[in-house]
Length: 148
Image 1 (cartoon, helix red, strand yellow):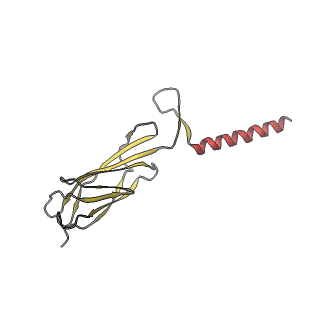
Image 2: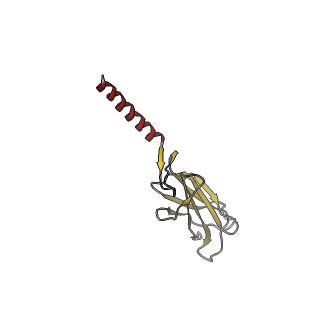
Image 3: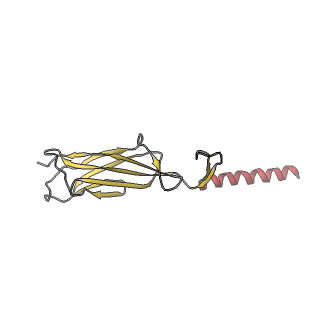
């Protein structure tokens, strides 16, 4: 009878530990106090790339350039500046392709597209809005070549 009860408790504990791990329940003692903080969720980050897009020929800012990173996209402002953010991204592999594309035709001159990589591996992370969120911002200034 005692062996059967122990087997049931071990199975129950194994199932409970598995479910808590799958659901993302965890405790964190790295909060500056001696008491651990128990949390529910999965760590994530907000990655932001910002900078200016200028012409390689004359260093003038280029408005209207489409900037795409993952599913997010933005256009450069009149001063060539842009800011694009991926929200709730994975923390494990923080490397994203980023594309710069002239979509306005001859309105501001025509420029070749450029594909770069936004690498957040060595970026400084800051705390976000909750215990699981982290934020990182990198600066990428880009010079596009005019089409001939």
